[in-house]
Each structure stands twice: as structure tokens, then as C-alpha cells.
Length: 200
Image (cartoon, rainbow, N blue to C red):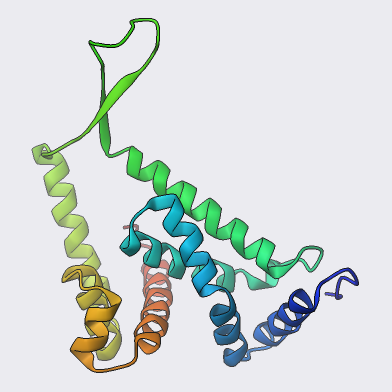
């Protein structure tokens, strides 16, 4: 992996941080996240228009990038590669979210216009409700396998639906620590899921 001679100073620094990260330097991961966390978050916020979703998608973007960091090619700047991962992940998220709506024809529209109105499905049928309950049970079983500090964080964030700021106040720890530990928690959960061969 050779440095692209056309890289800017910032891209060159990123390149060396990536090399350090691949060699096992945890501080390099933290620095890369610090350099791009805010810009990724605000880009995603514009796409989803929801701060909680944007925060989760930001963590997911870094998780996917760091998990596959050895696939990064210095032909392009690290930031370009990272933004592409974040954007594609967000598009997938929005596509899945749209699948939870039910479309019906708009009787007031021109029949040839093809326009329609989407309504969110308010209730689940019995089969869907059962699947939802089974999935929640499975998620809780997997979360219970985490170490206590990670398990508590995940429950506060995803079961109690507290914001990062609320968790920071609840546990009396810095906001950055909350985000970093939740990031690590998600990685551990993914490892547990892969090892157990359970799909959620």
C-alpha cells in the first residue's frame, strides 16, 4: 500500500493513520474517528433528518470502515472511501425504512400521473407480532452475553432509548466515552451474532 503522490497533507496523514490502524494501533482508529465523526454525522443528518438515526448510522459507518479497513485502497483519499461507505449504508437504511410503509393509490390524483400516498402501517398482524417478539427475545439473549459495562450501555441506548447525552449524565461519564464504548459494544455484538450463526 503506497502513498498517492497527489494526496493533500490531510489525506497523507490519514494514509499513515490507516497504516498504523492496520498494524493494530487503537489510537490511530480513535484519531481517524475524531477527524471525521462530526462531518459524517452532519452529512447523514441531512439525509435522514433525525439526530438519533444519524448518530447510529455514524457509528455503523465507522464500524463497517474499520472492520474492512484492509480493503481500503490508497488510490483514493481515506475520506472519500469513508464517505462512500457512510452514504451507501444510509441509502440501505432509508430503503429498508421505506419498506415499512404501505402505499395506496391517491384517488384525488390524475390516474395517469402514477402518484401515490404512503401511510405507515400502524398495527402488525399476529404473525408479524410474533416474529417481532421472537426477535426482541433473541436480541436480549445476545446482549446478555456482553460484559456488564457494555450490556448496560446497550440496554440504556437501544432498550430504554436514551440519547447519548442522557446516558452520559446517567452514568456520569464523558460523552466521547459513551460513543466509543457503544461503538465497541456493537462490534462485540456482531462477533457474537456471527459465532452463534443467528440472524436478527
